[in-house]
Image (cartoon, rainbow, N blue to C red):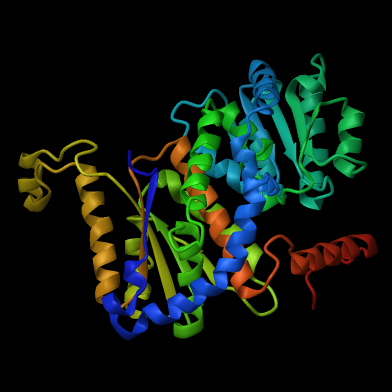
Length: 434
């Protein structure tokens, strides 16, 4: 049985694209440097000592998640997920899979007063619920949105218990969100303090929203577990897709100045995955003047908006194209209409045929312009496939952090910005600096 995903970095080497690619010799040196960190990471995973990823091999918490989803679904037609960054991006990447969601899920991830007003005006408040997500329990944006939105909904549902339509996710201990939860007398699902927000998609942070829209949350973890096994079977990392991905990214940065990494899936349902990846890579690696800048793109849309730059602009990028089997899928173009339009090359072909040709053509064009390209292939886009890709990118990010010499799990510059915002609010300096 083939692996759930394939990983091909051959298009990143000099043998394929010339002197803008990585050399086999230099990659061997990077992989030698990665061997020690990979051994430590494998040991931690084997000993169940890496919670963000070993979580995919557990199922004992799924009943609590399903129960919370069932309670909210019973009392709500619309559920707003209030959270920012890692508290929402992973859930968005998963829930887009739902073709016929059990509830209408809305993500309130920015305290824009106009957006919040539009949300309140667009829903039946008497059938609306909320899930408030903050790992620390003290995220200012999340708290502000919760403290303004929940009272409005509660007023419209005065005869209902708040616990029927509001839930929270936060780490244990005394924190602002826990205090609000106690005030509202609502359930709080524990957020493991050892799992950072951008690594939390396999916890209730990602799986409660997924369960709300009717996805198979066990399959999400199963796909992640399969990806973990694919990588773990390589002792030295040289056959681990995530290690190879990290190594070639860092080598292209070092040797070729590839300071930008573009992730471009060919599926609308993977657009949110690319945005989730953008935060994971940027916030984990962008420290001490190091890291590469992630860009999310979408095929075939961005062939018409970014590909010109990619092919003919600055040669400072590495490209990752996520492909899938699309040929033969979708409706066929009627030959008579194609003839009338003068586009006979489309006659009889499906929309999947067109997308399949375009993803192959993009890869071919990038390689032809001597741009480094790796390909990640999946046969389908479903819960297991997304779970597998997320585990791959988490492992790859952690290994890249080792190679760069940065901490993959902190975000000191972000904390500085948060403290700055708090001080401006305390002193009344809420305007733009002059």
